[in-house]
Image (cartoon, rainbow, N blue to C red):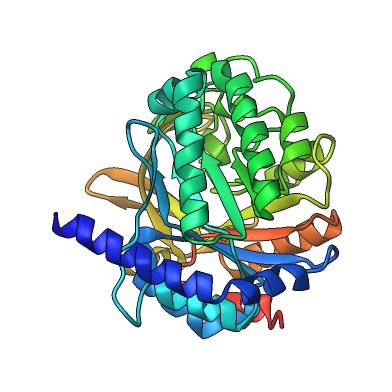
Length: 375
């Protein structure tokens, strides 16, 4: 009961802020010209305190921001996940965005394969799902929304397209932008050996997305194990290889995607985190198991405490190995230099912009210098 009261009060507070600032939000949207390069970031709800603080301290480096504040329950109903206290949290972010003419595009995150498919394939459930989303858009007077539905089955691709087409029509009438965040791929069909159940990246019809979405955000990270089992997999390279976002792979994703998606709509997703993986095997044949995510400060501390040297890899990321209690670990993670390379890649291919996952207060000073002042 208490949580429900908190959510209702929170919804009221944010709603008041956004309604009162509606004109400013429209001006912020109009101020972003067709040619302006987007710099944005996702802020997960679990990082609200550190993420919003980092955003408030460096807001002038962004022209968009995407708080991940909407989630979907098991019945397919979109809900606001807002824990708000006056003067801090999401209400503070909305106020700062209005003051600095930054467009807020909240994200609806959903990665439950079964629930997504069950909702999308049933016309009545799909309509209820869309209606619940539109109610929140109206409640908060939003000028943009980001649909980030991951792990969709390819069998639901046509139904997801129907959902996007219908939602796009409603949002256009409201003057609300539609962003779609999708997994990366580099081919029209899944590679041999990728089962239909694991081919999530092929559950998106690029032609439909290009026609009906204002932005298409490509989640160009975690690609080393795309199409592989969720936690562990096999790899066949001379040395351990499992970067979060290999610069060469990212370029291949951009090149392929541009054959289907307009450059003026394409936004590159860039990770600010890396992975620690447990590795077993011998030269040329390795088995990997994801152990944990690490941001740069955390990864550097692991290297320091294990007396390991961190080296730049051909992937563009930093990496090192270490052994502990007879277990062998491989750590690969981005830094300001590898992120700068990806931003330059986005500019080289003249795409719409970049968005970082995630803004959580752990960014190094060098990354802020790379971004510079956007205003």
